[in-house]
Image 1 (cartoon, rainbow, N blue to C red):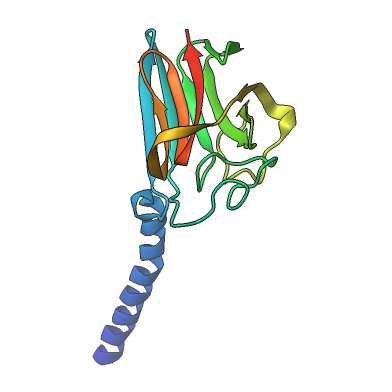
Image 2: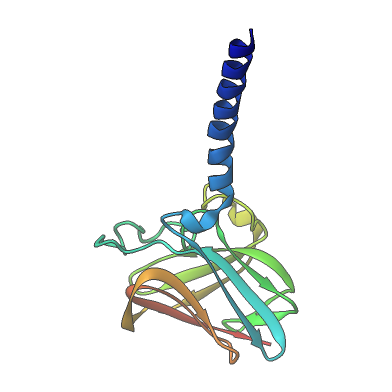
Length: 176
């Protein structure tokens, strides 16, 4: 009877560990193939934060390949990219009210549409709804001065922002 109890406890312990391990790995996002990243700057005294995941090029064709032209993209990987602004700002010359927004893009060869949407907490762009767009701006993609293996969002305290991946950069401005 004592051996049966020990075996039962051992089986329960192994089962608990097997069940708990995947849950813990889901919470630790740093081990993902596209790890999380955050870019924060104080733009004219206004805190601006982008939260996103960084997919890698991995010798793939990015533009009009992995990321199709003319379709809404999550602007990164995993969960949708989001931005939080501590006060009203001008993005590409248009007002974005204080708040937290999902950031989506529609890439194009000559022009990108950058979208700020009410829904910031979702996986990818699967639940994207254009009716919840707060702001849309356009930006011109340019050839980057350097190669970015991982998708990177840059932002400085002067409000110069850009989405960068591979040899492409999409610059835009954020001002108070």
